Image 1 (tube, rainbow, N blue to C red):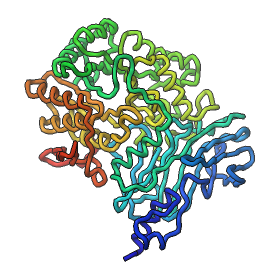
Image 2: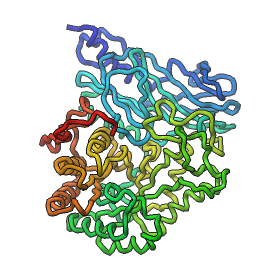
Image 3: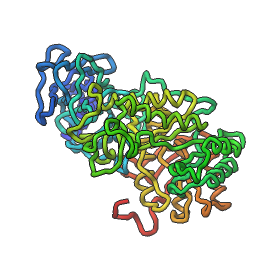
Image 4: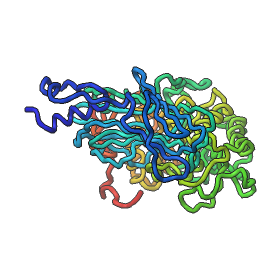
Length: 559
């Protein structure tokens, strides 16, 4: 029997693809084809100058215009290209809207602005929900999606409701309108995933491949293949109180537990090494790590400035979302940019093969991604150079970091805008911190990002769901489960080995996990459409249920 539910179900996916979803002959007869987001939108409006209101644009062919502004929306067979020319008008945001009936019964998934914060989920239709970069909609065994291609010049997000789909392009410079002068900017290219009966998991992977198409994502850096990355990071047991002796102990452990004929394990030094009394020679330490049979890596925070920094090199205090005494370089100031890149150059010259850089989104945009919502930065401030969008400034900084680091070093971005780093950085810390002190935080942050951003692995970059801490504060059952889950996923596997927790049992577990990771497994969650922290996974047809909950259950308090 054909009813309203089946009508809306079919119509919801036709809205994405411009055709009729042939679920049955009755469905085909009962619905009209809905045009998709690969055609020119039904409405475009812009926010300009410092005005909170919006100006509607008028269409003429593939051009949408108002005085001093022209938006080109060019249809291609497999993409919709959007470019902006606004020689007389500072532009803040562009809102494109496509009309079409969307089922109220679909579940929808989006991405995150930078790292996720335990918040990724398939949820019912929510008109106000911000869906950064891409969206997937699924119902009744059918999934469809839309996204913007990686490396775009705008901070993009979607909305979907029962009457249509919106794409927002934030083209601000800082929190003010960008001043493009006579420059024409290719803002974004929209791609879609037609309705498919493949699983939501495989659909997500397919959409990611479309978004990264035509982008060169290297499979090797120097002597290191990127398909298997494992090792140690000291943060979750040392928390900044690391020592060279502890680092070398970690390096010895990594060599001991890594497969004898497998990839070289990494030993990554996290924050705390800046204390010269504890770390008199970082170049010598890099060589000593190599001498232990591991590859040296190091954490850096290149945008952090200090109190002696000239004020004109700094981002304005008003750009912070919260009151902050922290200081950050404005990378559009040439002298400040040189100081930023000096940090990268220094780590390179010390001889580290794996560079993990952190805090760039927090410092560039003044806050954490979990607080961005529809506005990734506060209103009312600008970078020194007002001619570039925030997305352009971010991506150009990423390219300079790569240029200085060189093509033979692995770069992992933490707190970076992953969508803008594709083809530049090799790996991305995709979620907020796990914890060596509180398992609940690892469950919420780590398990969530492992599951929901794993479809990006090997396509955008290598994904890192964060470390597996071996500490006295984390129950063994959960430590072992988290270790096995990350290893089976095939994503980056890093452990934080507190020596108090490294006994024969722990060594055996890490050895087994590294051996599994070296086989390049590809586990997937089977309950991710119903849970933020999927319990049920499968690998090569074998099902596993992980014990994420402690005996007391989940904590109701903020992790």
